[in-house]
Picture 1 (cartoon, rainbow, N blue to C red):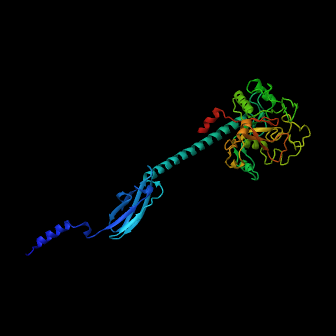
Picture 2 (picture 1 turned 45 degrees about the vertical axis):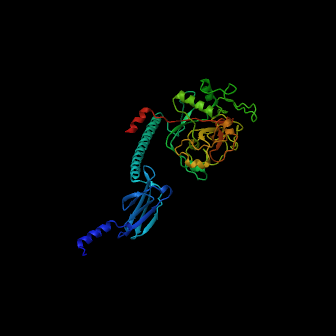
Length: 431
């Protein structure tokens, strides 16, 4: 029987529709993408189109494919794997994807950029505020210095004043910096960086018994164990029944808590914020503007102070009346010798001095912490300055360790207070 062309064409189409898949003209290519552990579940894109989650087997066309896997870590971070895959026709290719470390998403990058812009604005505002504060401070100090000059005071000239009849005699110290010295240890290295840009008042003498007794009389200072206040010089086991007198003798046998009581009483009485000197301020003040190691020169010499190697012609075997020796160039007496003087700084490891403040303020961070058995008895460790009558003075301002709760016939104190501008002096600085 003769078959027509139309019948043959219809039969061919019908057979093609029912032909098995394996008999397709082009088998295509298979890409197998493997992921393990935390990489599983990453979203797979090929040539920019989402195809599913890893692990994934997918038929692809031959050629060069841009494979990209992404898995979110959080709202702003993701982990990514990217690779160009070249695949031939009718082959199976396997790619084991290993996602990289977390990185910012586009949204995360935008948030970071916004945060950086905001931080830049804050920093610019902070710098403007600092500049304005510096201008205000400089203007306030200038007004106050002018006011002092009008009253006949020039910081550094040694002219003294009192904030009340029973208050310590004070002199004004000018702003400036310590003359540079060879940087041969951590402390010198720190002090070489200190700049004191403010004038301040310092006690002309060490605080005396007479001044302390006035505090006791007015109820500002606690009485000692004997009910008579600090002892004159009686130290059982070392000096027995040696009374040096009171009056203009430097007050001794007081500890840091006692000193704080005295400073609080003096501040309340005068309306001025009395305090201890910092270690840097003490060193600066003691030198009196000189570059020499001591207030009077580089050598200890004779009759310059009350110390073990000062060759004192009169006395020298006990604390002496304040002002027994010549003042330094700024009018301050006994900054070296007589009695060691408390300062506001805590004791620190010398290696930490690289972080010490350079503006004259005390070092109160990274303090050495004593063992509990010592701390419970003596309190925290801190410094005293200037040495005392029983100690040899090496060329330089002595720095010695002490304790908060320690009281000794060798330790006293000196007071200081800032120059506090009047309110009327502060306003114009803001213009």
